[in-house]
Length: 406
Image 1 (tube, rainbow, N blue to C red):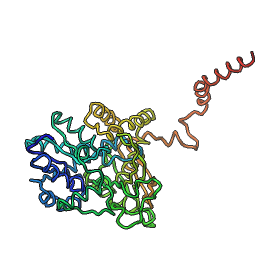
Image 2 (cartoon, rainbow, N blue to C red):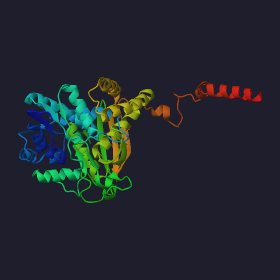
Image 3 (tube, one colour):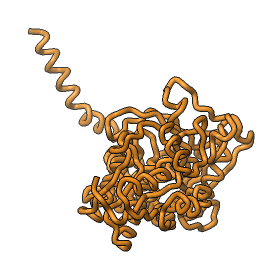
Image 4 (tube, one colour):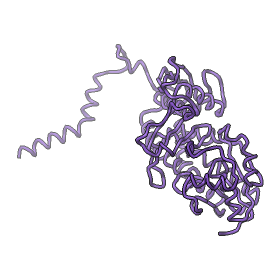
């Protein structure tokens, strides 16, 4: 192995990155500087510095990038309506801002290399490394899971115990989790078999809310206000993006909103089963889509839906810092110029029920759409429209009939 003097480690305090600190020092003889990006994982940051230093790091940076995460990554993705196989991309768009900040600190510290704890089976290794390549194309990258002798999470725990690395989990509760302000993911253990139902009602399984069965018997009404596709107020109260997402997480979680159990197609080729909690994000996506139904014309709305699939692929695959993603975001921003208004929703036992939508830019005309008498729509016009619209069908049928007579 090469020898490095100083390595910057993407550090979460979880099992993987905790044991990587002594592993790096043993195998590279280097100083290890840890960087944790605060994207709203709250309690996971408590005691993080003490654990990092105790495990052998020389220092820990805890970088607050919550506002950047929400405003520059989450909201642009919501505006695009981008979902990857119904997954709301909670881990996907958190990695680029974290990796970008790690590169900045690595340059500041004069580091020889950057290290991450992503497995060789996952998507995150791609997301981290593509971002590093975008900002430090010549920086060496160390990915222990691709080169060390450890083969399982059980062996990781053995290594941690042998090296007196403090960890918070046990072999029985060793779900692989990722948490940020937007979501919480659960993978591993019983979830590896898609035949097993997630233990939603087991105490401690869900962390951002409750199951629909445990939600209140009375609905909760909320009103979200948007300006140019960006949520700006909840129930009439102006809020910054971070505060608004946190408030929606609380309301959504209390009402059993935002649970997703899927088998998704990973970038590396395998199928993987995961359970996601995204209470506030699920509400935001829903509300934004409702508002667009009255603010976008048909052609724009339909084309944007096609683009959303490609946008989601780019985010999922870690290709945020690419010319195509930037160009797509420019298109999306143009479509959002009139996506301003208010959406009222009813939250009830895991359901989001539409309760009204208004916009000063609405394209919905009650005068045109009414079933009552009107003076603006001449129904006789429909006959000519249908004749022209159906002309190819009619001509084909006529010619087919002539050919069949021969």
